[in-house]
Image (cartoon, rainbow, N blue to C red):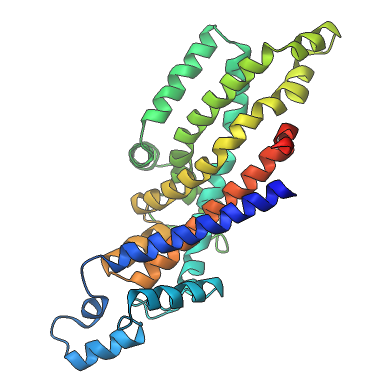
Length: 313
């Protein structure tokens, strides 16, 4: 219980620091959102009224206090560019980014665990070297470049997928899946390579320990030893990087949405930056940061469950 409490306090402090940094960065950026909306020909009275509406006439301390208190209550403010609640705009784009993230994460789990096991069991053999080379290549390729290659290959050459646009799940689930599959693959491949290398190293280390030799001496089948005993222990160090993997998936989703013209949070974020829509930018960054921080908190708790030795810390 103390461990979870300490991690919870760390979560709150981290979230507070992120909120401060996020708010301050966009307050010191050059440019006036009021002028961006009204244009350079706007009258001073109009500019002053709009600045007052968005609390731009108050001190930076007052603006932060008002903004953070609203954030705690779930109110992310009003978008300057779209003249709509920030939370409503995020919710309208969230299904695309969420679907893309989930698909990429599922692909990572499906492919990384079997590949890691195959490489570890074939340690020092040709298959192992092949996996090491391909994972090294996978980590070196940027997701956006891989996304462009997949678009050209499967969209333009073989014409198997629609590479531009998005079909909602409610309209056609099959087409929705096809519109998200290529960007999900592009996001997943570099992360699969990372997880495979971590899992392979962990499995090789576990396979040399005494409990594995004892299990062999008792006549247990190889698959039983690996999948029932070794894999669980090997996943402990892999779990520690899953928080970072989630963050990278979210970042990859934002970038790939631009490449594939997907109406998700990524395109909304780019549009908000272009128009200096500070409430929308801050709200989106806080939502993404909160997600990453909470995921890391869950990973820490899960790590404690899988490794009882943490309970002594």
